[in-house]
Length: 418
Ligand code: HEM
Image (cartoon, rainbow, N blue to C red; front, top):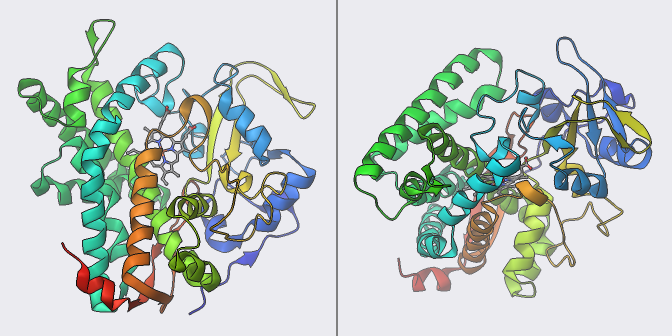
């Protein structure tokens, strides 16, 4: 079944409002990004109503340069449009993505320790088993919503495993997370989102106290037991960074997995060559990440006057960088608008770049590649059999509902040992 087609971008660039989630629900912005890359590599997005104007970078090279530079630009006044155009980020200076300078390095090192290969090797086997069990069950049922039945159950469970959240609390935490990130939805949800966020922080506060008393082999214990210059992290720092792991690691990986199934269904030749084993799982995973680019944008605030493409950006202005555009930049990628699982080289920037490069990249790659492996082993093929629903957001892009009919590769299923 065909997706509901999105409308072509209007000719008038200024009529496209990148701050409005509805824009992404209505339009296919491919032409808009192509035009900006070609003719307006630094574009001044107009103010709309109460929402102030901001700068937009669309070319790969400019975006990489900005990601690298956390001296001229800061993340401490927010790193996504919703906070950058609002009142900033109240977690600035305490939560890794919105902290810069020395404290960022120190906190990031603590988080990296919590995500060390030793810790991740423990979850690897679990991700593999969960993925294969869920996919085998979905294939057994024949048809279902891949987003809901399979993809939604993997990243959150993995992060909960890492953090050490006991299984009886996971549904509670999942429901809170859903409310907390629905603030992009129309206004009435904003209050519920705030309350949910507070409840999540409260929940982790309880865990911190428990782990301080009796440490275990989990990320909360690592954070609670870590010191910087002999001082323990504050409770705020610990709970905000737990929250950041949930926010950063759930929807993004989930959307990439869903996009993989959608893109393979839309490109049967690519599925056939992947299924035959002509293409490595690693290469296919990277193309899924480039193609899906689940986080469309990030942003920074200029700490001093700076010039880009001959234009002066005054201190205090917001500059946004659009990964969705960089990952289709014809200056870097041959045939950028084709999903080609053997693409090489493939230096996409789905995980950002530089000092704030995604901490969960290894884990996300693991989750996506386990899903691709399971699809290859267990299915002969699949098709989309119902209306595809896209998420409503100006930050994330992807699919929230994907009705799929699977054709089993029965021999492999019978061999499955759960
Ligand atoms: C940072 C994307 C998965 C945790 C980032 C950034 C991007 C990104 C673009 C840079 C943000 C910036 O520069 O302001 C993604 C994508 C993912 C993914 C596309 C999946 C496909 C994960 C996972 C986790 C995670 C699984 C954790 C469990 C983080 C954290 C940061 C971050 C903590 C902040 C790093 C810092 O500021 O130093 N991510 N991410 N992400 N991500 Fe991810």
